[in-house]
Length: 181
Image 1 (cartoon, rainbow, N blue to C red):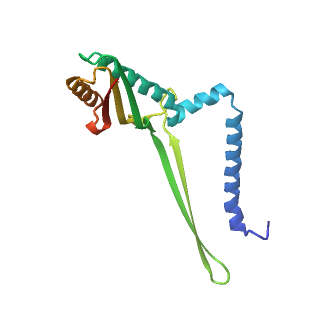
Image 2: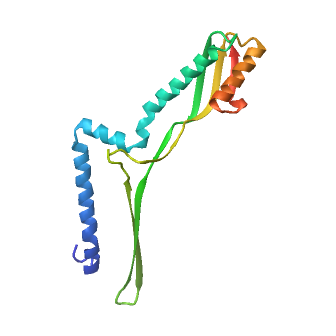
Image 3: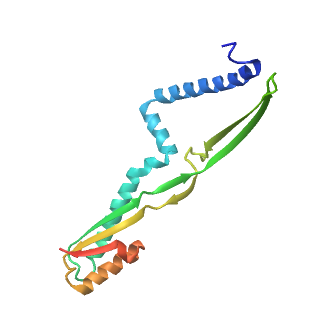
C-alpha cells in the first residue's frame, strides 16, 4: 500500500477512513437500539411514517361526506368513495452546509491534476421536545369521487349531490360522478 499512495494522498485518505469507521459504528449502534426506541426515532424523523394517520383522515373524510350527503332531502341511502392521487406530504426543515475543496497537484514530469471534492451535511431541525420543525404540509390531492345514492334517480337530487360534493371538497366537476342505487 505504501507504493500505491504518496504522502499527500495518505494524509487525505486518513480522515476519510476515520469518517467511514464512524459511519459504520453509528449504523451498528442504530441497528442494536431497542425496538421501542427505534420506532420512536422513526416517527419523529421520517415524514413518510404518517401514512396510517393520513389513511385514517381520508376514511374520516369519506364518512363525513356520506353523513352530510345523506341529510340532503331526497338523497336516501348514500355511499361515497374518494380516491386520492397523492398522500399528505410533510416537509421538515433542514440546516445544510456544503463544503467544496479543490486541490491542484503537479507531478515530476510536468503533468497537472486537479481534484475537486464536495461534501454536504444536512441536519434536521428539531424543537425543544425533539419533534421535527415542519416547513410545510400539503394535503392529500383528491383524484375523484363516486357517490351512489338511492335518491339519485331524481335529477334535482342528483344535481344537489353533485354541487355539494364539488363545494365541500373544492374539486372540479369532472372529478365527481353520481350514480343511483
